[in-house]
Image (cartoon, rainbow, N blue to C red; front, side, top):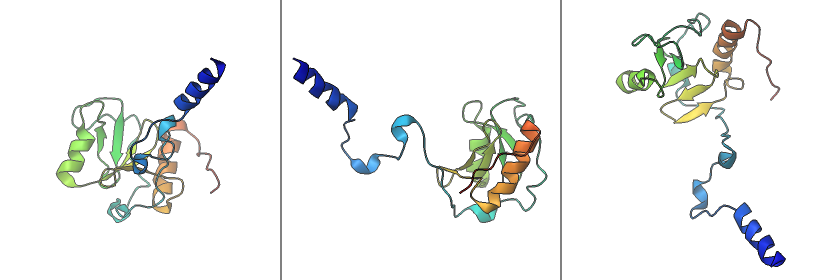
Length: 144
């Protein structure tokens, strides 16, 4: 019986996967690696040193939380979890790069992926500016 219990717990530890290509590194823990390059970086606004404050409400519905900054035109719009105004903005304008004011992550709608704002030189400045506006101090950058 003990041998059976040991073998069944070992089977439970390994998830069943039909197609190994569908696995995403870190997906079972909820962690997903951000990309360190994106073909859409040329669409960034030329002035990301001056951005709206993180507490800026959505430009369309005035919702105060879960807002994103369009990194192409600097509009502030709400997330998919509120009224989907940033997603609609992408669909209407093809502005695909956005920074979440909630966690300061950067998302590319075209790549359907997070981008590493601390590694990608074109994003590092806007990440630092947003961090300072949100927390009042410079971010602790990790070494790469």
